[in-house]
Image (cartoon, rainbow, N blue to C red):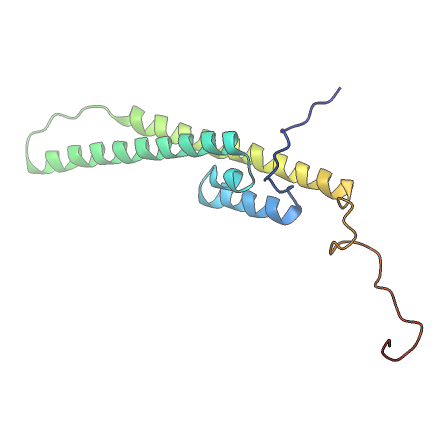
Length: 143
């Protein structure tokens, strides 16, 4: 028996194709996790965002430590300490969050396709309904 991918939430809109594209673009081109949060994937989006920010902070810390050592070598006799592991760890964390966001984006497209295949929710006045408007039998205004 197949389980649902997420629990239905009363305030959460179903994911459509446009919403999936928007979330995927933000996830992949801006910040991993923000698109997932936009789509209502709170746990995945929060984890991706925390991982991405932590990785970015580690890369920035590595950069400043390297720059301090370079400027110290220019101005005086400073001993160099290995700090490359900080940058590598930060880079791995950020790339991991990006791939996690990619997986979430793909699952959003799958959910959007499934929602589109399910059809409209039974609302007759929805813009996607196939029923044409009723036409009057007379050519003039009704009355």
